[in-house]
Length: 379
Ligand code: BGC
Image (tube, rainbow, N blue to C red; front, top):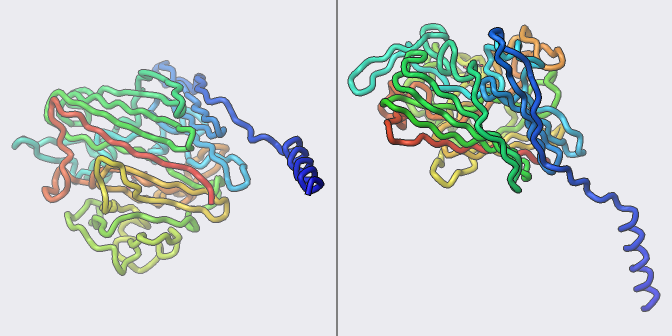
């Protein structure tokens, strides 16, 4: 008996001596010049690193996530978002890579809406419609960095932008504040608050294109998607919502059980033809103050897994259908169609013109709030 104990003691001592202690990284925030705008204003990149070595790089132009390095199941880190190597790329960008979108995520039909009996005409930048806040939306603005913070939960950065009354045709001066926190649980948490001095509409979102393989030469078609939505909002040929809430049941829009993004994307289904793939708002089954889990994406080749939580009523699922191999992204890669997917937490597209959709109106004295979380892990 004694011998057995000595043997166990020796084995455990030897294995403790030789086992590699799990390396704990220091959490930190580093700031460096990213580039200069044509008028000389400086754009800075903030690298948030958590205790697991995960890194999120954010620039104050567009409050944009320019890189997000997360490990695969073997511990190999790769950048899982599309973007550009330099500021010139972001200034010329028409794909909204990684940016905060405002004032209004997605389309407003003919760029028109009525508020308190008055009609507003917004700038038009997508056929006859407005997309993602207009010609120079929040993604094309230099934001103010209000604070950086290293709490025990993980590093964070707070940015804000003040949009003047009349900008892109919208009423009221709006202040939007966005806090990105990279937690030590490998979550990218995005918290928004917004205020206005006149009644207006506000519906910001975040526009990262994820490619969990870590290799943007590959498409996202083999990644498995789950969305907790029984309904979606069908669109017309200009991709404006028709006002209908349609059942996903029995259609290629049904992601209530995880299924490969590419499994049905080329089906003979009108909505997919109109969007050239998925480019649709899903009506989330749960949305409330206690932020529910609403979607996930899994890449079996790398093991990478994203889970998404949001308190918003909808998520726009977009499969990068308009990427066409003509845009030169990071490391000189020409991004081809469907090499990134977006899950944009939002109110439904064209809500200001659809009385049956949840309201996007913000009044003086009210505070707009949104919380959205993308959590990265492996399976
Ligand atoms: C929209 C697409 C649009 C894309 C811009 C998405 O949020 O739904 O229709 O082309 O953003 O890159």
